[in-house]
Length: 305
Image (tube, rainbow, N blue to C red; front, top):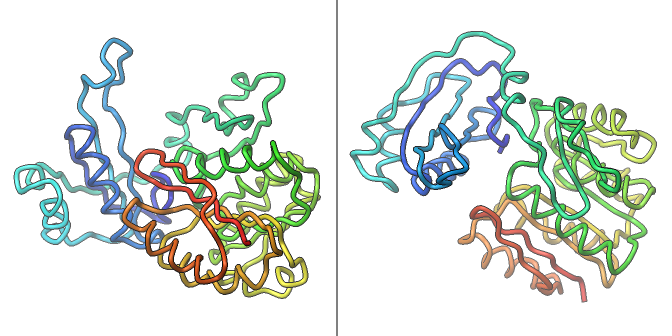
């Protein structure tokens, strides 16, 4: 998932105009079907208006690094939205441009509890008591606009109001939003990792830009398989904002790396993914303490008992 940002060297695009519910459903199924390095999708209202929030059509834009199979993609859309909607999808090439800067222009600051995630173009939106995290669009997951990231930030705010974690791990750090948020809140080192080298570099750069470089030094790792992460254990707070299948696979590792009483925040889940993930973590002695649902995505707070 790249939160609506095109993949590296994106050259192809599919656009579909439809209603809001269909736009969200189509974007979700594309996110689930395609690898994040090959495709990304955004869904938004074409002409927002404060007079009638539900009055305007929505636009789905899906970007691809290689030419997509149009017939298969139409069939995928038809499976959830019908043949008529699938037939309206328009495919084409995109011109070479600075799409990172272009995508940033439409991103407004996102508030989640005490946190505000904003781009460099929205610094004037930060208030005196905000914990501000400046993240510009990049080749990595996490500008704060996706329901999964917001859910994790809200869980972090909730946890911080009852205790101060000592050792914190962020698995699948993306642009580093969660690691930076925790570093700014607790002023302590945060272990973080990602399977994608671009994300690792992006997160490190963002940490420096946000004054958290002394606390956040992400490493390249598959899951939590890295000596630096093992040395930091046991953790009493873990974030894993990825997808259902890798989350299930990570359950034993996370159980080994966490202390009794630890909080484990899991996200990147559609509603139908939640039961399977709960089973995987309950097998490791964890219980569900809180669930947040935002824009069709679930964030779970598990506790190790």
